Image 1 (cartoon, one colour):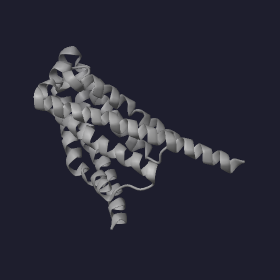
Image 2: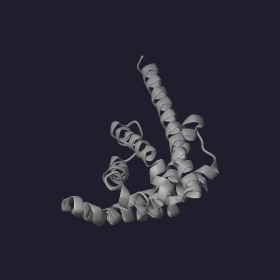
Image 3: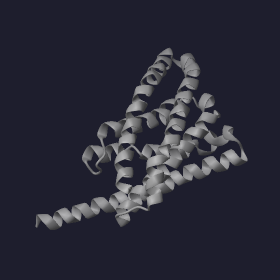
Amino acid sequence: TSKPLKSASQSSKSNYLIFYNFISAALWSGVLAQVIQLNATQGHEKVYAGAGEYTKWVQTLAGLEVVHAALGIVRAPLLTTVMQVASRFLLVWGVVDLFPAATGPNPAYSTMLLAWSVTEVIRYSYFAINLSFGKVPSWMTWLRYNTFFVLYPLGISSECWLVWQATEPAEKTNPLIKYAYLAILAVYVPGSYILFTHMMAQRRKVMKALR
């Protein structure tokens, strides 16, 4: 009896992850479409006003990534997952949402969302297709494990610039918030290095298997 139960459990988990990844890919496609459309028609100053609230909640949904890793639903290192999600939460809730006037109209907000959304559309689509069909087209694998060379530095530099932009209004609100931001910037470089080397290790393994 244990084998059928285990099989049913695996099937339920797989179905849930397929659903989660497809929905996430669709939601991040919405972010990407809004960023492109708003930049093209109204300029980067209007991206936050038009897409900020939607993006904030789409990113908040990604908090489930930590739950998935902690419960073993996915085989992902918990530490790097927490670091990735925490940095995103910091930006959408702890920086931009607190000081929208200083960060929202900044071009770095647009470039950050562009880097995030392209990354997530590729990543979630990759997982959804892989879970659904057991394999992924080689071009999608290439995108998944190579685009971060451009998107990661773009995202990180945009995030750092937004945190820096928020230090001035933060000082007027509460100097402790400013010092917290400066402390965050101090750990961003080593933290980014850890995540980047993690992605490089993944890339080497996958690209080697493709040859």
